[in-house]
Length: 217
Image (cartoon, rainbow, N blue to C red; front, side, top):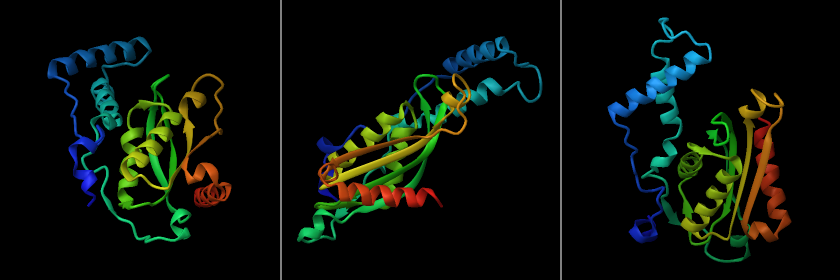
């Protein structure tokens, strides 16, 4: 394991578990607010299927935003397998599709899709499962797709100091499907580049080709 990963001065807030606390009195109050809203919007709260809906809704919302609490197993780094030579500057590690679900901070409606992450290792590599944790710690909150991609890219740069990082997200946004223009088939694609990817179009093309080929399956 990387000694840097154990240094408390180099630990990000996302690796530090900070549980949110909602008191029983607050939960009860919030359930009352949710019930008032649902009732005003037409839901009948006196049926077997809806009596607990305000409580279930709040619990689901709380779980969907668990990314604010961080993840103690977020990053585990190992020594790189590359020991010099030009190949170390172009050899990519690509992972995806990584499924994610998030809540748009504009309307609190879900957006969901897949993330693809590529990086060119320098001195360290990261455990593959940690890339999934990295995506989800930033996705499970009120946010926007663009911010999720930037946060993933910047955190990988901070943690691994690689030669380059690439992040590609594609998602469907319920705020455009359930309201407004009601566009039921559109997807939003966003890509972010750091290091060698910024200057090498061949690296970007290889990464995007891999991501798109995997999204077709």
